[in-house]
Length: 295
Image 1 (cartoon, one colour):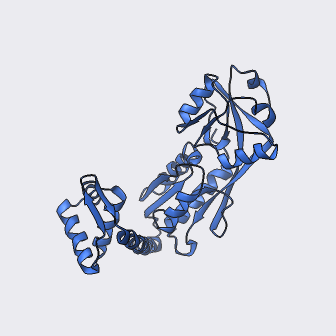
Image 2: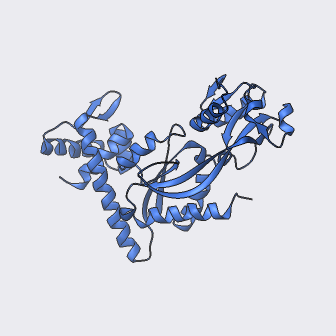
Image 3: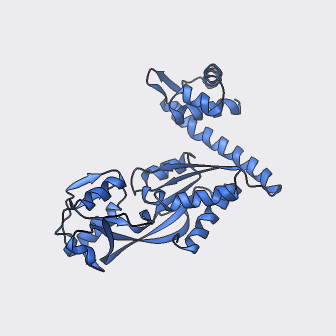
């Protein structure tokens, strides 16, 4: 069993095709096929289903992939430790995140980090919602090194990062736009636009605590769509303040009463085995939080 075989298997599984994996690894498709076939023969199992739609891991391949990712992650750590002894931070940092942090905050972190550490490659994967399931799976399978997640998260290695507040977003043409604060009871009278950028569990819990019902009139995926619908007066929403470095034209962000707050943290699967580049990324995120919002 050779490292290039494991690298080939992971690249094909992640990209879904031999063509994309070949471009990523800068080797020919025939070389990739030879590497995977040799690994399958050695292990005595089929690792990939190959078809017109691409390639995906078999059940056995999925189990092997977990260990292959661990081996490659350990190799990255070894290389990073060697680089660190020479006062260099190199390697790769794979970051997973809830979507509200990828709008403004994480781009700032990644930009600042890569300017200080140009030899580190940063890869960003976005969780489809504000929940934790996909991020936990990516951590457990070594798809990512660190996750920016909404807390609490029991039994994990968490670096507390910040507190964030959920605010009402309303059209500037609405009578509510001039308010300094808005109660949930007032918002409950308005049509609601739900999006994947909202922390649904926190919003539903806040409504339920006041015995208010919440039946969204619209559900959208894109933050721009949410803003546009609110701007046009089609409804209101409740969104994380973190998602807006600037307030978009035509809408207002207003604190909600009772306040809805959440804590965010960075989660590492194995802090003691995380390479220097990952810890450098964590420190950069903490530093930007200490500096406060970008002026």
